[in-house]
Length: 125
Image 1 (cartoon, rainbow, N blue to C red):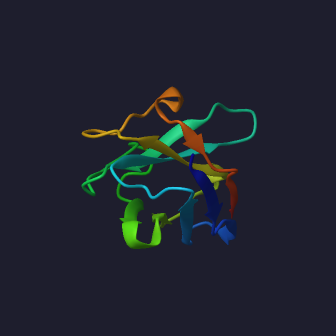
Image 2 (image 1 turned 90 degrees about the vertical axis):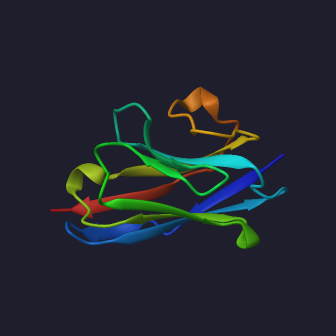
């Protein structure tokens, strides 16, 4: 069992930055893929990016070149650095874990077994 807690969300002006954190407890990330998703009001949850066990990262086209994912296994944490934020980035951001997933991480919700409670990111224009 893995418990995930996201933090770092908040209110920021367009063009600003936030660093979101995802901390795991119960078991380490180990050989797991960790994904970030977001859900805006009235919209479906969508893939933002992911990092696999070896540190390779994958991003949605909408955030490529603006968002960066990193992991610190010693701290059982994964980070989402968000830069050049836009109002359309406003959403609740979730991290999720796919234990034992090797290779390219999945981009679909059902491919992840454990989810955090989310952290709100609001970007004002």
